[in-house]
Amino acid sequence: MDLEKLQLRLYSRVKNASLEHALIAPDDHILVCLSGGKDSYTMLSLLQEMQRRVPFDFTLTAFHLDQKQPGYPDGIMAKYLEDLGIAHVVMGEDTYSVVKDKLDADATPCSLCSRLRRGIIYTQAEELGCNKIALGHHRDDSLETLLLNMFHSGQMQAMPARYTTDDGRFDVIRPLIYCAEDEIEQYAIARGFPIIPCNLCGSHEGQRKWVKRLISDVESHIPQVRNSMLAALQNVRPTHLLDADLLERLNAQASPGDGTQEDDILRLVTNRPAGE
Image 1 (cartoon, rainbow, N blue to C red):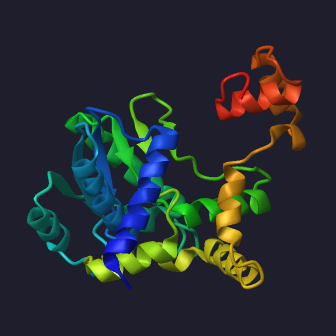
Image 2: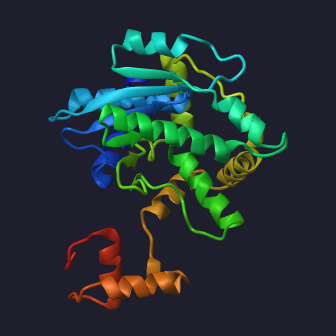
């Protein structure tokens, strides 16, 4: 494997996501959330590469939360970030015990754990003066989320590349949203990132693992299915779906154009100027 070519390929996808979704702008201060897994290490590495390449300044502060899980390797993350020479915060907060105390042994901890982490992250972002928060979700996370929502909650919803928090304080960005998980894994192995496993949620992701296997099974028949699914998320035809409320809202917002009503709606959804 050619590490340089792999990094360039991943970086190109991060750059494209940033350009298409306005993820990074001059003078941004981004809180880069590091779980200790392959995805967040890769995200930090590629954002640092972007800092070196783009013709404007933005600031990165790495943030890692030690949730006091059993067997957590003390000091590894702090040493890694110190050696990297990046501004960082490593915080200890016993969310592990809170989750264990609040939930039954067979309950899925992910939702509660995520809410606790989110509150801590938002507090840190505010204290540090950050306007954006970067999460390490990648292409495959988004595709799996799409299918999980379709199968279990009857919603056509994946993961956006960027959204604003409910209180309007921060933009949350996903720089890896176009990056494939298998390439991220190759990159993380080649770079030798000091992976810190999560001992809380690993055994509770049955549905997501099942969906991952389902996509892999389809991939054995349609080799490019993941790329096709990603392309579908970028190529939505709302007039060919069955959400009447969506069409009503789009019709109300669309201004008259030179084309058909469908052209006006598609232009609105894709932010295309009239006439394109």
